[in-house]
Length: 335
Image (tube, rainbow, N blue to C red):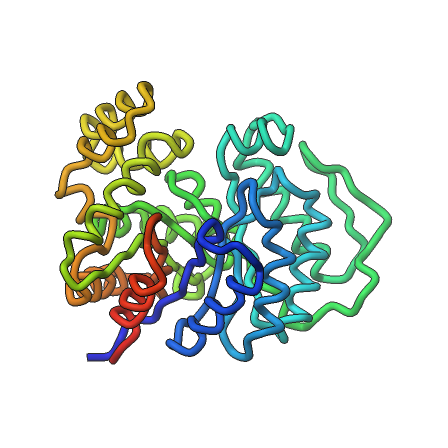
């Protein structure tokens, strides 16, 4: 059986140096992953790290999960995309996402106001920067004119992906972006949300088949399976109950409102053990690929088989050792 196409999400908090992250990216390339990516919150400036990863790899695609438009001016994001395109020899994709009110307001000092409009304007400005013309933009958030990117722009500018959950945000991705990065969807939920992506593509007079869809699926494979489930349960519960409002809202809309309410109630008391206990097996298995290598492989294949999916972004969970990661990477890439 042919292995599904997979990307690998690096977990920066598991690494105490950029060299360590680069080593993991090289391992991803050896395993045959299509892209390597990592997130940015309050840790590493991932643009600097991704530059190192690009220089120390040869063929694997380089992307991010994700950069927030609240963190940098859209013109700077355009410069970043073009610079990364250059240092990676065209292997870079820029991923954008509105992130959460907590990160935007408490870390970047920006009001989390009309996030989808800001995201739309950010994409527009990046497109102008990457075209090499004078940036001339009169938006609700950005008014720019009279300057252009000083360097040479490529004929094939970097693609722009959007991480999004809700119907309007996914429609925006279909209409204006080059790809969609969902996370914490069930198989049915992902399939249903594809309709919003296709509607957006239609509104933008585009072909949805040209959009790269790469859902993040949290994965952990161990030979006994139980160890993987224990580690994953803690992280999935935290993402649903504590990591901003949007993941929990999305899970609730997919049919798990009571479970989300219970997990959030436990977080109010900062009781992480109760959060994990409140996550039922059914929900854990619906949104993650955890267990034995065979079980993980089967679940990743199921996500890859959803109509419209191009690659599965394999994300680790907290607490995994390097041996756990090696087992998981082998499980999803071995033919």
